[in-house]
Length: 279
Picture (cartoon, rainbow, N blue to C red):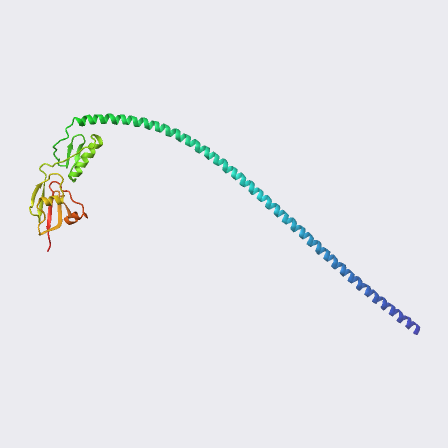
C-alpha cells in the first residue's frame, strides 16, 4: 500500500509536471500566436496604408489630369471664341465697308441731285432777281402813304407794312430789310411823318402839341417843350393809345441819362406827362 501510495504520488507529480509543462507550452504558443496576430495586424495596417497612399496618389493624378484637361479645353474654347470674334469683326468690317460704299454712292447721287437742284434754283432766283431789279429800277420809291385804320400801309414792291405799335426806327428798319432781302442792295430808308403830333404836358416850360420830325424820344420831346421846370420830377409817363386801349409807359429821365433805363421812342398821338415833384 505504501508502495502504491508512492507510485500514485509519483504519477500525480508527473501528471502535474506534464500539466505545468503543457501549460507553459500553451502559454508559449499563445504568446507566439499573439505575436503572429500582432505581426499580421501590423502587416495588414501597413498594406492598408500603402493602398491608401496609392489610391490617394491615383486620385491626385486623376485630379491633375482633369485639371490639365479642363485647362486645355478652356484654352481651346478661348481660341475658338477669339477666332469667332475675329470672324465677326471681319464680317462687321466688310458690312461697314459695304455700307460706306453704298452711302458714298448715295451721297454722290444726292450731291449731284442737290447740285442740279441748286443750279436750277439759282437760275430761277437769278431770273426772279433780274425781274425784281428791273421792276425796282422802274418803280418810284419816294411815296407819301396813308396809314389805314388797322395800323398798316402799302409800300411799293414789298406790300403791306404794319406800323401800329412800332417806332419810326423800327418801321424804317423793316422796310430797309425787306427791300435789301429781295430788291435793293443796302437801301437807305427815311420816314418823315406828315401832320403826326404828340403832346408834352405837366411840369415843362412849354407844354403843348408838337410835330414829329424825324426820330423822336422822351428826352428830345422834353427838350422841345423847354425842359423840366423846377417843380418837375424826373418821373415821366408816356401815355399811348385810345381810351379803351390806353397804355402808360413809366420811365425816369435821370435813369435814361445814366443809361440804366432805355430811352422811350415817341409815336404819333403819344402824350408825355412830366410829374410834379413831391416836396
